[in-house]
Image (tube, rainbow over all chains, first blue to last red; front, side, top):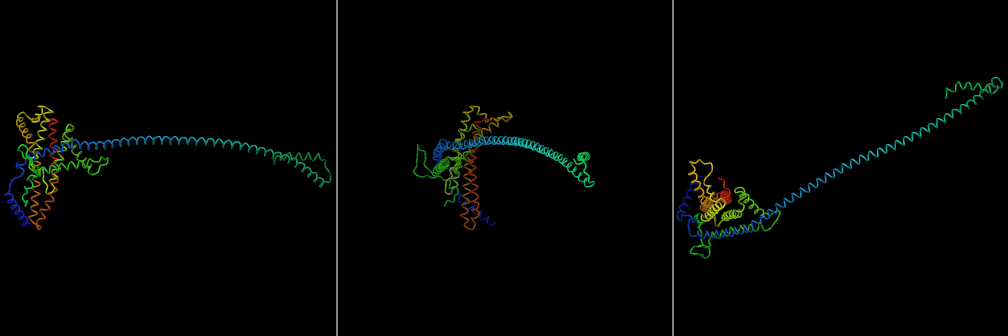
Length: 191
Length: 244
């Protein structure tokens, strides 16, 4: 490494020696100063004019256009967002209204149904009651009829029994009176 | 053999001699590379602004980036009053940048490595800024040499220092660019010379240095163009917005 470095130093020294032969900065040679100044001014003036008159307005135009477009798009997006929000509100409002209506209809139909059911139930009950009453009446009638038939049967049975036991024929009216009397006493047990 | 690292800076005539009123204005290699740089800028801007697209292509994007970069630089340093000078500063930045970058190509010539070129630009800026300052503020512009809040005892001294610093602006502005470009290119040439003289065995080390230095020089080329433009903006700011 050391030998390498010394080699480099030696070469630098050699080079410096070489440079010394034609030392000096070409920049400080005034031969072409006027030419450089002239061409610099000329070239830079042309460059300046073409940039300021042509290219910069073009670039600026384009940048402005883009900015405007972005602004416009953002505004549009905002507008659409507001619109959609309004629509969503409207939608939810309609939905709410519909829900209320559904509830109302539900209640109304329920009450109508209830009423209907109630009235039908009532009429049914009335009919059933009527039927029951009728049946009761019939039963009562039947019972009454049966009582009279029972009496007549028991009268005939009694007269038969008495005839068979005593051989006498009792007078019918007295049998009837007795049966009547007994049946009146006991009939209430079965009615 | 071009082993002299300063030889790359020599100016020589191309074509016929042009003499106007006894002054030699011949077209030289320096003039050629000025024309090439300006041509590259114009071609670049032409291609970059040819198509007007909402979504830009690469070239358009780069030109727009340059535009916004310089616009932001001006508005940050010199404020909104400097807007009329935007085309000038943009042209200046582009010209210095492209001269530096074209100079980075092998066998090319670096226009900005000549003190006369940078001095003319710096002097033009200096004189223009001074004139703008006097037009905008009249004789009040001289108050730039008298900073506020300085004790009366120190005022004469400070004023002299301020005047010297103001007058040295063109020198510092021009020498900064010229010296940076010259030093960089000289160094590249020296290391290039080492590669040749050390041969295939030892040449790799200076070669790698050369590669690294090329990267550094590209950075310097951009940076110096930026510094040149931003210092112009700062001088312009002094002339437009009198703070003192």
